[in-house]
Image (tube, rainbow, N blue to C red; front, side, top):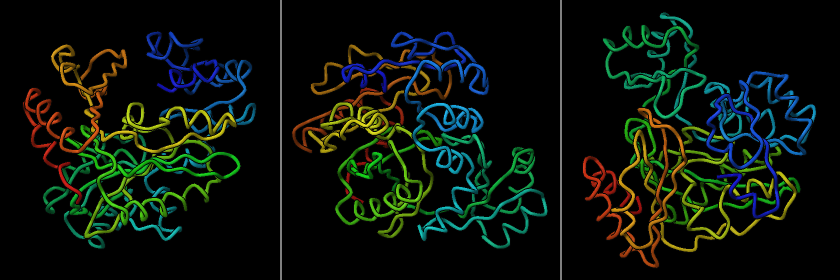
Length: 361
């Protein structure tokens, strides 16, 4: 999607991916290699002017190798901070940004000590490589501790206090090298088993938008950041607590392709390539459906007026994000009527998930 946004800007692309079937492959030259292959990294560097990444599990050594040879955005420091939940939480606290209570855990005794300090319920998480609900266990009672340790104890861990949030949301921002910052509307999200399934932008009000912009602005300034940054929040009693950060374009901002003057993908490229930033204003009311594990039947759903379909061309497997669809409408009532028809047609948990996004709290 980044390449699709960049081709109309006259940009050419090189990709590094271990898969011969990388979905971006048809849009540029594909260097097939592991992300940790420094020789492949340098070979690609010899062919490019600017490097970036679209997921935060890129090895820091590879990022530093690229950054030593070519312009590299966002900065390696932001990548490293967001790769480790403990570093991430400590950074947020140092910037006076609200987060749930947390404690590092490296042993069974350390887990008991952390629970003593934080209390239960709490969430035990691996510090690195965990995403979409992977690598974490909810602890409700002391009997949960040993099974959780057996499941996760081989990794460095962090224990976080459970947040009884009323809703989840995210803010997508972009900053260029001169320091100009633009924000898209705060987006309300609904998850299932830790995976994003629905997003609805622009419904959370000016106060929460201002809180989110203040938080993200502090992070952008701290890193002297260039590119798109996403921050996920819990909403608790009218205030925002940061849950996670992603130094990249983000799934909850995919709706910007169809309902914003400039998408997150295009603005990321504008920022890192020194092109003036585009307008982030919403053009329509919007709601995004995420397709996980398998793609639904397209022809039936596209009968709904205003539905924009995006198939990523990935091979299906359980839990994998394969595509999304964004429904747009000129007014809120038309949007929610159309979304209700789609959710009803999909069946299962979709009507209940949609109900979570109907409202401004």
